[in-house]
Image (cartoon, rainbow, N blue to C red; front, side):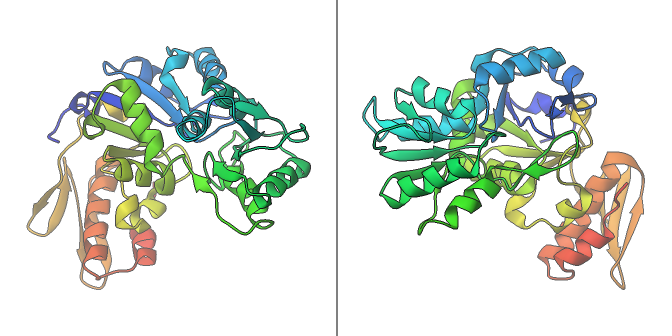
Length: 329
């Protein structure tokens, strides 16, 4: 993509929520205004499975984001639709997690049972919920050992909040895995179904979509797996050191300081006499493994990442070296 506002190069945007639009109940600085100014359609796709799309849309509207529930996709919705493709309508499924899990199953034509309800289940759908108990996890383990299919909405180990990271669904899934003899099917990011479904909602081919997130191993890896472009925004979990150390299949095509960068010129990468160039910024790996940089701001970080990733891929430095050398301010 050539220089110009980043958002102008795409026909649709898939935007993560936790760490990108909000952290807990609080809006990320500049996110609301930046999203409301976009001229391209947006689908909000989150691995957080605890709430139904209508509740998530209400939350976003309270923060000032203009959005309808039909433009919110949770990993519960994606997982329930995946189950509904294989199970007959009305099949009983154990719903472990927040209210969003049961609502998604019901909307997909399946019959959710809560932990402790009577009846056999054909599958377990496990998603995040702040009120999930050890007893709930135990019921999931019992059903899985009895032969129920085990599908989980996502396996993020942590969840961003206004007080910092808290245990996420992956941590709860790990507790169940300790009590059973098989691994779950994971539907949410980084697996393709979430982004493929979001692209369908947008009515845009994945190749014409920009996926925005704050996590390398879920948002950016998922974008690559689904064939969309990825933009990592530095308002959530991962920052410059993690970016520089990222393996190839976790790297974003674009790096944003915050969502205002969607409306800014995004310079192409270039190389000039050994310097990696982004706009007026440049960076190169000098002799002795020292990173030399000229410039400031987001373009300096982008140029530095170009230089460090090139050196890493050539075997000149390690991931740890790259994380240590990258500008982090």
